[in-house]
Length: 118
Image (cartoon, rainbow, N blue to C red; front, side, top):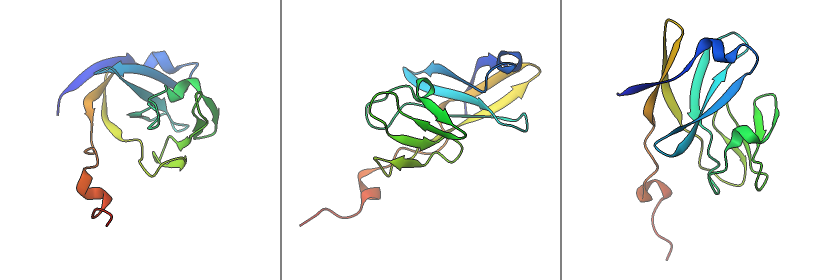
């Protein structure tokens, strides 16, 4: 899996979440209360709005465009869709934060949605 340097640990001294573009898609790096980090998609599954620009309440964010809600820790969409935000791999080397270019989980395929309607 290919990793790219996106941030530094010191970038999160005064903020919990930051958004970056990877392959033209928004990816968020999030610092948890215990000081650990994770990376996840932060493009709303509706129209790809950057969720880091939405209102946050704990781990839940509301899309700034159309109000879809997501739990950033679990990736679960709480309103609007059954498609979840996918995690990216993240590793820290020294003060540098590296993230995988692509999410760890594959995109759902047509077969994942079940048989066609008759």
